[in-house]
Length: 120
Image 1 (cartoon, rainbow, N blue to C red):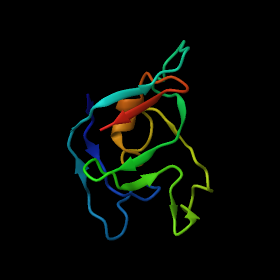
Image 2 (image 1 turned 60 degrees about the horizontal axis):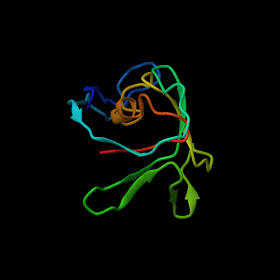
Image 3 (image 1 turned 60 degrees about the vertical axis):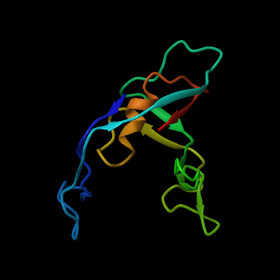
């Protein structure tokens, strides 16, 4: 599967480029999606415009070192803006580019409640 290319520029609310930042972009990314667990019942998988609640861990493939996650703490404190939540919400296929990894839109499409996937 392929996560789409696009603009990854850090912008202000009005769309202007943030001070000290430059316009950046990203090329298409090939990803691998593995189904780790499947729910016993799934009548409808996630589609564009669905609000998803997810838990995730971001780790380096070669070392396994965790660099991000929905429940990650820094110096014992929750990440600012996350309110100590262990999940986060996003709308599939509708987030501003660069807010979440583009592989999430591709890799979570069709996923059902209770399922687990690995995105590489």
